[in-house]
Image (cartoon, rainbow, N blue to C red; front, side):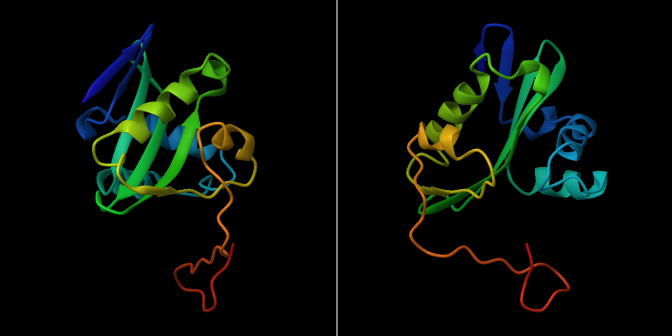
Length: 142
């Protein structure tokens, strides 16, 4: 599917995902800065990936892991700093939350610093503790 807003185009077509651009966007984040280009390629191929373009350049990304019927996990939401504060982040999220593979599911996400943004979209703090287990580590880690 494809959506357009002004000079921006959003697509869930995996063939359009620019792995090099996505890797570059993720390198600037606190949660994915150490991911290799190969890891990024695997995550994009294994999820519902939304690629945001300005003209022909990819300037944003968001991924969703979903079972389509009950639960989705929103992750790797990034907008290039040069394209923030113009409303495309909210538009990106509105499109994702209304996507046929997501709209009927409970959407989970983890964020360290974007709670106000997600609260405006209807997200709330989950009442249960979030737990994580990382590969190769007993007991998990951050």
